[in-house]
Length: 111
Length: 143
View 1 (cartoon, each protein chain N blue to C red):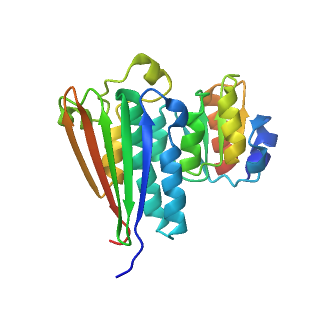
View 2: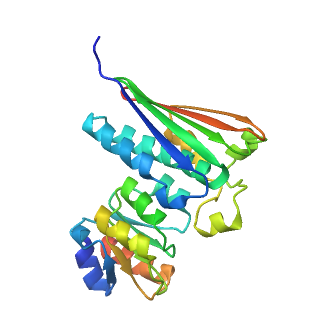
């Protein structure tokens, strides 16, 4: 499944990084601690978080993650969006909480 | 032997998170160009990123010096800062002296040094309280 398909199926808002909508997703990681993601997320994961700053994209890029999903209706900060376009890593959004959206993503990937 | 060696340096400004990750990203590009094994690149950028963020979060300024030869990458991060009084304690997972602002960003969870430790073939930390800290990371391309 790619990022565009995931966004469509779950009604996720695409904030930016559209050039990466074709990125293949092979798993997910849910965490708000950056070093936790740095240490344990795998390439191709979609990262579910409530963090909305630019450093999220630095980590997503270094770890070659497929996309970032911001939860609870939070908005990405402008420099996060800018970095999303530069890196080609989509930043998506949902009004749901991390628990709910993680469960849905898990079901789609493992169902 | 005429093997190419590469030397790169980066300045790091304490407190400025907006540029954090740039050195790791540049090093990643160079290692990819050199066809270094992907798993070595992944480990190196994790160790370097964590070390850089520690300078940004704790020190006043620092210098990252990177030397790449055909066998290994050697990264030396030197900072002017408060230093680490108890390195053994600092290595413990969950131990952190980060400010609440830094923690709110999701940094400072006490996992950085442990990430560095598990992603470096050699990790050496020396520190003088009130002066600064030097971190040396070595990763080998072939084991």
